[in-house]
Structure formats: C-alpha cells, structure tokens
Image 1 (tube, helix red, strand yellow):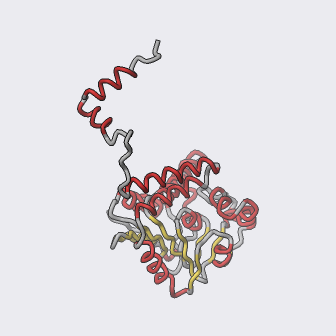
Image 2 (cartoon, one colour):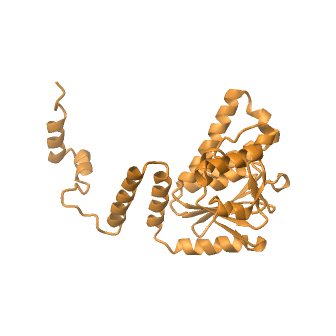
Image 3 (spheres, helix red, strand yellow):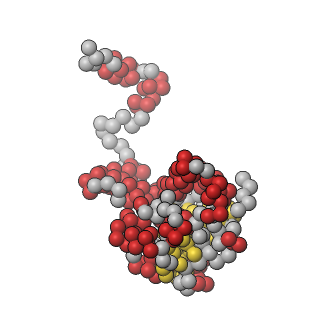
Length: 277
C-alpha cells in the first residue's frame, strides 16, 4: 500500500508509523487520517506483527486536526460523521492485539495528544509539550480529549486542561499518569528500542491477555473486572497445556455439527422443541 503523508515500515515484528507532514507539525489532514486508518488495518490484520510504534517527523509528534480543513467537513451531520470516524480510528488503535508505543517529541496537542491516550506506552522527550487548546479555536475535542483524558487524569484536571487550553511540560504528563517516561531529547529512539527489547522477551499471549483485561476491566465494576481476570487465568492455563477438562467437549460439539453425528442429533432432538408449546 502506498502512503503519501505517513511512512509505514515493518521489521522484526514491529510496525512503525511516522506521521510525515513536518512542515505543518504533522497536523492531521483528512488524507493523513485516512492513511492512518489504512495503516492501522494493516497492523490489525497481521499475525506476524507484535508491536506498533507511532511517532512524528521533524521533531514533533502532532498538533492534531488540521484546522484549515475543518470547513471541508460539511454541515453538522458531516461533522458528526467525521468525529465518529476519528473516534473509530482511536478505538481501533486501542483495540489492537499488539503492544503500542507513542514516541513523542515536540508538540502532542489536540488530536495528537488523543493518539497518545490510546497507546499502551508513551515515551516523551524533555522538550515535548502537550495540551488540549481546542477551546481557543471555539471547538471541543471529539475523540478522547474529554472522555479518555478524564479517565486517565481525573475530572478536575481534565477540566483544567480543556477549559484553559494551556500547554504543559512532559514531566507533568508523567506525574499525572498520562504518559510513562520522559527522556533526554536525543534518547527517544534509544529508549523505545530498549522498551521493545524488554517486551519482546515476554510471553506474547500473556501480554495480549493483560492488555485486553486491563482495558476492559477499567471500564466496568470490580466484580465484572475480576471475571475477566478469572477467565484470563483459565486461558493462560489452557494455552500452557492444561486444557483438558473431563466434562468439556474438547471440540466434539463442533465436529458433531460438521458431521451431523449421533451426539449432534441427540442434543438437537432433546432441545429443539423443549418448552416451545
């Protein structure tokens, strides 16, 4: 697939997406957003890729939506469709069964900051700045700037970030649980590689499960979240070889349906008209 406004690379189980509109600080044009969606789909469909790194060209991550294009979004319904499109893009990144890393240099504001919020790890340079300045353009965030942000740093701080619109230093993002780590300006790529080295050493199925249950569990009550933990524990045992349960089908039900054998016929004959009178 050919990309014009981003660079897409795959190597050693790692996909890398570089937002490549450096002259406009990697503002998210409609075309760039379409290309991100296409690149994410490549990553999603791959079983060889285990990791994704997202970064920006030219010493900046992204300043968010390209404001100069917003009139092209159309009427209120067109804006609704565009915002939902961006929400789906963010959700697709968050839902990947790969471990994702945002490598942030320079500005990560508006939509750029919203991208970092759906990544599993965020590493930033000391000079990085972040914020949600939409309020001074007379618009509101559409795909994480109020929702995910309040879940990550709390309601009161999310109001501060959105209602004032200031730009903050990278270290504050770490202190507020928004990002993971701040490194010297010339050490960003090196720190990403060191993190990848650690992550590659892990049980990859275990990491996929951990990402899933943490993402899902944080959005529900304690007892439901504990259910995810229980099922993940059972799945871990199964994929580690302890899958044989005496009263489980072990695939017999699926085979029975495929072959229409006696097991299938017995089950359906007992169930099909039960209590249907």
